Amino acid sequence: MKREFCIFIVLFLVFHIHAQLVYHDASNFPLLGRATESAGARYGRFPDSLKNISRAPLWNLSRNSAGMAIRFRSNSTTIAAKWVALFNTHMNHMTDTGAKGLDLYCLQKNGDWRFVNSARPKGKTNQATIIKNMHPEEREYMLYLPLYDGLVSLSIGVDSLATISQPLMDYPIRKNPVIFYGTSILQGGCASRPGMAHTNIISRRLNRECINLGFSGNAFLDLEVAKVIAEVEASVFVLDFVPNASVAKMKERMETFYRIIRGKHPDTPIIFIEDPIFPHTFYDEKVAKEVRRKNDTLKEIFNHLKKRNEKNIILISSKNMLGEDGEATVDGIHFTDLGMMRYADLVCPVIKKAIR
View 1 (cartoon, rainbow, N blue to C red):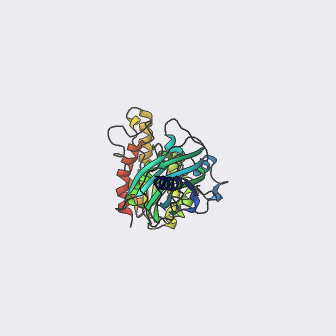
View 2 (view 1 turned 90 degrees about the horizontal axis):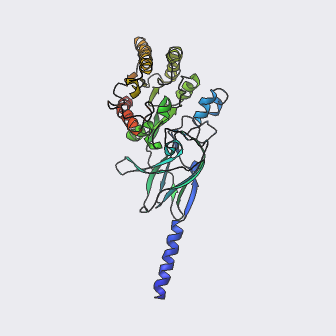
View 3 (view 1 turned 45 degrees about the vertical axis):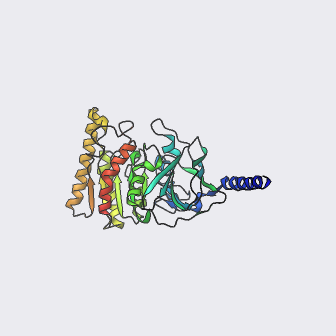
């Protein structure tokens, strides 16, 4: 009896030690989804050189970590996270989990990524157990970062006796990423969790790194953004600015924006996407007219480029983007997860075909 009791105590202590968590700074692991390495902030999307050049709203939005993800490998039975949000964003039409939470995915043997669980935020300073009670085996993970907030710090927690290391698999493939430029929808509004932003859905489907340069309400074709985009050796450039850009701004800047990118990438496919046919445009005649005007302007400038023998440019119609049922947005404009999936269904095959 005494011997059995001693064995029980030993097993209990081993389990207790194993169950304790040790946190590791996420900056020690690869960060996907950043257009530049010259950003002073680990989770910023713009180089520091733009701080005093870009419009203040654009610069502030660049500090959101939309589209970024941490890659790591571990045999832990538990995965947890500690993080401090930069702004502590809260909105009335988007979940806090999507805006400032985290999202964990695991790489399967067939090469697909499978959702594990989310880390739900409670405020500016957060700690959450994402998954526990797993069998202790080596797995490859991807941890998506907040869509509408930034990070001051991030740590990943694993069992004290477990390992956490660099990923062995180059998935998503990082060479020649797909880079997206656009609006609040592209930034991720209003996905319920980070993994459901359509750029992240497309990244998993293609198993290729995607870079999200979506800026809520501020895709005004700022030329300094085109210069950031042009520095990326991308496989495809996706330009989805029409929901924000006015007809006047498109006429003034669209071709110049395009030329900045094309000047450094003469053969890389560049995709333009029309303004979505939002559900409320079936009733709001003023908005419906404006959407038509902007899409007509986009097509006019696109056809002008075609007539000047510009190669490898593609225009995607938004006619079937959101489906016929009107159920794909949270507020008539910003996409729900259903809208994000429908966007990915439309756009992903075009990108896949364009990648060489």
